[in-house]
Image 1 (tube, rainbow, N blue to C red):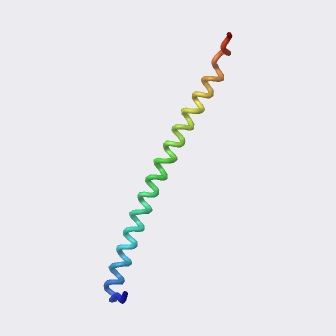
Image 2 (image 1 turned 45 degrees about the vertical axis):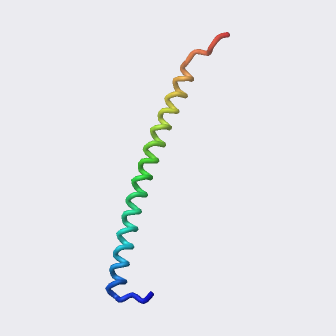
Image 3 (image 1 turned 90 degrees about the horizontal axis):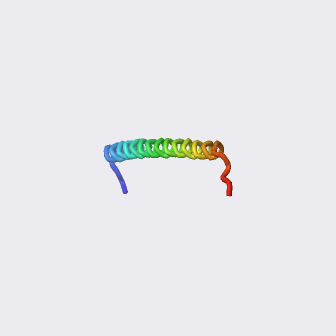
Length: 59
């Protein structure tokens, strides 16, 4: 695979663009994951706190 300097330059630029796009997508997914994680954690903590405030059930 002998590439001319021009072809090599184009290939490297394309690889950089692909890597940049992949990184943007990764960061967006990571942000969405952590936002969801923190939302679910807050909901769980609220449920647990509400359960602690509940009077014990009598049988």
